Image (cartoon, rainbow, N blue to C red):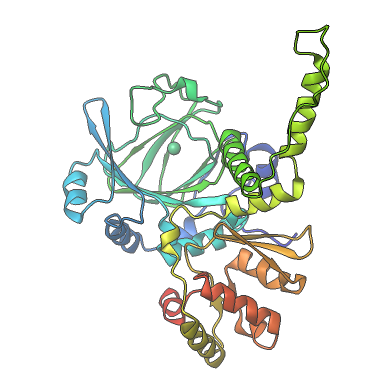
Length: 397
Ligand SMILES: [Fe+2]
């Protein structure tokens, strides 16, 4: 395994974290991202998220506090609405998918969170607010790394695994009415708190706080089974493939549901839903689906030809567009490549390029020109809107 990126200023190794904490226990990385927190411009990020919060393609929420009640409102929001709401320090703005709009945040995921396969990361949500801003005690179904990029936030958390039935049903938020934290700490610039799925937590902002939540795409079994079986049934109905269930053999002496009949039903059901290769193809598509597919802008054929010529001339790398999600599956031949919720079959000779795009989100021009299969792959990615145009690439540099 190649060397993985990891937090700085910590004695907890990546291997120990994966063994003892990942999916199990919270972990604190004091100054774990100190260097990058000094390089990222929180001012630029702040201004950008205020701008994008007015877009229909960005999921944003504002939480206002009145006495002990929380009021939740969904965006898009105008700049005026945001500035009026945030003039009360106890209110907060939460913006999802910021890495799909801000190049430096996409690079943060590539460089500082390279220890996680990118397809497992949902997005970076950014929360801003002033003294006392909070969304209350709650838990999430996914892992999250909470990275403090500006100001401070006081966190309280536990190491339990909460369940949905504990939630306050009268609240718009996923509030835990009974929260008994075991740990607390104030997180400052560059500090990171890792929380596994189900851990209760409550963050209360200090003045001028900005927190980046690096969330993991962690669908529940109900979500997975629901999506997979919906697709499976659609495919069978489209193919007019609707096999019978039970044999017609009857036992007139027994009016009960026999164990043999239940066994037969169970066996037939499992064989109907269980196809490992089909499941692997569905899973690749499911995990690369975009929440906002409209962020992808396919390129015209003539623009692709023009862009290819520009890449060749300037020896410029090919970069994935910020919203694009990719992964691949090399167990079967041909190689299965998943891009933004779709599956493509590719020659195995393209695996190095796909691996590199998955890992670093870019590939050098010299890897592309000179090999017909690579060039064809890059053309199809450009047509699909998965590769940035040179203009966009230069803006990101
Ligand atoms: Fe949370």
